[in-house]
Image 1 (tube, helix red, strand yellow):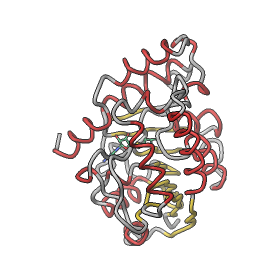
Image 2 (cartoon, rainbow, N blue to C red):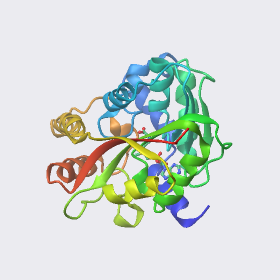
Image 3 (cartoon, rainbow, N blue to C red):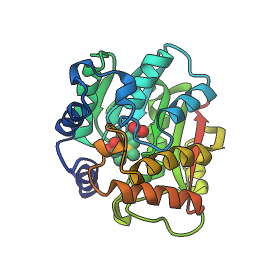
Length: 276
Ligand SMILES: C[S@@+](CC[C@H](N)C(=O)[O-])C[C@H]1O[C@@H](n2cnc3c(N)ncnc32)[C@H](O)[C@@H]1O
């Protein structure tokens, strides 16, 4: 493991993630063996906007049943399960945090999706999959942990079939310093928030063509405001993002709101196409 991989594993999985999830499900009065995907969605989509953002992007790109999707930085697998169950896709998930991959497999089994999704431990910068194997690379809120966007874009182009697309959701820089701790980095050393220009350049350098660039900040803000209001009332949902983020969740939620409200960051959704 290199230093950044090691640090990100500690950031995202400071405790045994699967044990914590199971404990939280029981504490919420639910049976982990009868968990529904809706109940899991309270914590398993780890990006601003939650499951609504995932659905919106999938709809906006006209995601069709049977699409072979590689979800890069798949976390504990919530978005991969949404794309499989609601859009009929065949999804492989890759993540750098070993404990998240373990939890992704465990949760898929608990919600009755058994072996439908292939979850692999690995890096976005050296994807553990064959060339030209996917119709769509999908990635939500992972790019802020990637120092070398150009290498990420090259890997995307390598694993896509000709004519395939890459759909991402990311925090990008606005004006002013980003406030930490954030959900993706407790301190600036783990954070590599791209500028819109740097992101566009990284993809353009591979020969991929821009298809879509849309501002998703309003949806992310509305979702964050609901989450913050519940935390402040001290009545966060029994299964909330705190299940996944045991450390300083209130501060991270507040900073996410401030970063977006003050224009320090924007939330974007974007799509590139590999020429046929
Ligand atoms: C904020 S979470 C988003 C998880 C998931 N995409 C979701 O929306 O639920 C960021 C994820 O990116 C993963 N990640 C960070 N750097 C990575 C890398 N180089 N390769 C693969 N995954 C990475 C982290 O382990 C973490 O699971």
